[in-house]
Length: 211
Ligand SMILES: O=C(O)C(=O)C[C@H](O)[C@H](O)COP(=O)(O)O
Image 1 (spheres, rainbow, N blue to C red):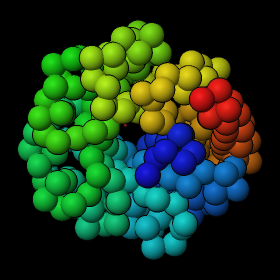
Image 2: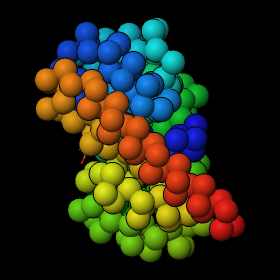
Image 3: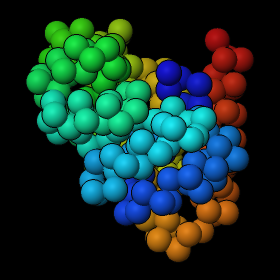
Image 4: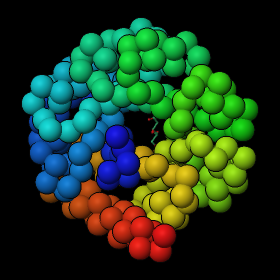
């Protein structure tokens, strides 16, 4: 699902009316998914609008409770991302048949995710936890687990993450930074998105050639 672009833009939307121009900016930058965090009152409405009107695969982020997962899925979210591991949230998503990516930071949490039947998790906050070398070290004992490092990722360091075979995709707000959304600078959002897409494509194709 996220394996195509290997990039997941994480958005904190203050105003649901920004949903459509933002979707257009991301799509023209070459992206196909978006994670709308439930950090603002506009989030559920924004998910509804994106699910109804854009070609993007829309997910909900910062999901902390089973009820939030349910509301997000009702609004049209097709996957759920959490900052940490909650067995209750994971279970509800599985009941709803929606992919869920709980956040992990330790081997213990990865084992919890494995026990819950998951094959991919978010690694959060990635840079603060030790970056790409930490993902590499954590992935060694869990060969079946894939990671989505998020937190502190930028165009400058995404290559280090995407070079780790266990990394499914990287996520973050850098392509859709709050100041750009506030200023309505969709051209810069498209520019950052296109730069990230090009960097990710180059790395992924390079890795495929080397295999
Ligand atoms: O809470 C969640 O579920 C999240 O999605 C957390 C966000 O992914 C990170 O806060 C993004 O971090 P930055 O890219 O460094 O801004």
